[in-house]
Amino acid sequence: MTRFLTSCVLRGTESLPGNLSFRVPIILQYIVPGILLTFTWFLPESPSWLVERGKIEAARASIVRLYGTKQDPDERLLGIQDSTILENNSSGVKYLSCFKGSNLRRTIIAVGSFLGIVFTGVPFILGYSTYFFFLAGIEQTQAFTITAIMFALQLVANMLSWYLLERLGRRPMLLTGIAVTLVSHLIIGGIGTDSSYTSGVLPKVIVAFMVIIIVSCQLSVGTAGWAVTFEVSTLQLRASTQAIVVAINSSIGFAIVLSLPYMINPDQGNLGPKIGFVFSSLSLLAIIFVFLLVPEMRGRTFGELDYMFQHRIPTRRFKGFVVPADSTETAGQGAGVSGVEGEVTESSETKKE
Image 1: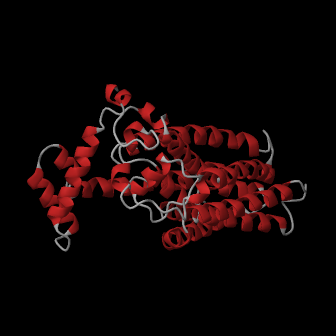
Image 2: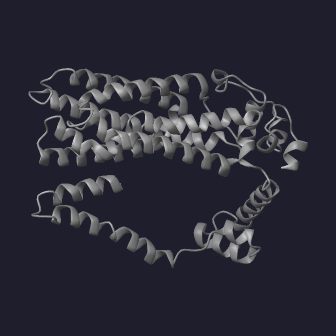
């Protein structure tokens, strides 16, 4: 939504005289933070935060204010208390635990799934699409209009993905979306080998496949990638895993985004549409990663996932694997801490940590 609104603002201000064309969008950016800052004072405090500080009655009142009384607030409160106890018991777990035993596989899956967003070219399209359209021969005003339309379609794809994620599953969405992205980038790169790509129908073809890329990414890595990253980690190590994922993704994403202007600018690398070959190669790495390593986790409980990772169930057996009914409760008790396959209690090494 914010990207769509931003593109509309930029489209509306690009013809303003002088430096107003960039000053007005910068000034307008303060509106949303101002609204958020104002309404923050009226938001109820987090029940989890209150429970952590022993303010149980205040936590219950906050739950009632947030969720109402249709579902028993005491039941929600009990769940929060149990989660808090679990987190406190594993507070000594170090980041190093994310790379031990079965947790190493889970961390790799989390990092790789999230990197798919970068490898399929999403940061390139979000940050440089308007400028890239201009380099491809699209008139400036049209480039801003096309960008607004593209982000509107991305918004629609995002809402559609809410439905498809539970209908199709994570793995099919990732494989299909990345495959479409790979082919689209190859076509754009191929067009770039023609020196006349800025004339005739070729600029429109480039635009069409850029739109296909952003829509397919939103229907795959842009949604399923987030789901996989969240689901694959254990409850005890989720915060640590997410921190590792964000750190690695931000570092690699920063390096790629920083290098993009040097690759596409006419006075630098002058790749133009041939940048598609770069992202098609990265998309190939992403689809190989998903095919070999990312299992289907739709509909699985955390206990089931703990059991399957501990017992090293192969990636392609996850979907139809039947977890023994009496094993899911014990599987999660020590999975996030020790990370040793089949182990259900904390290892002495972890306790020392």
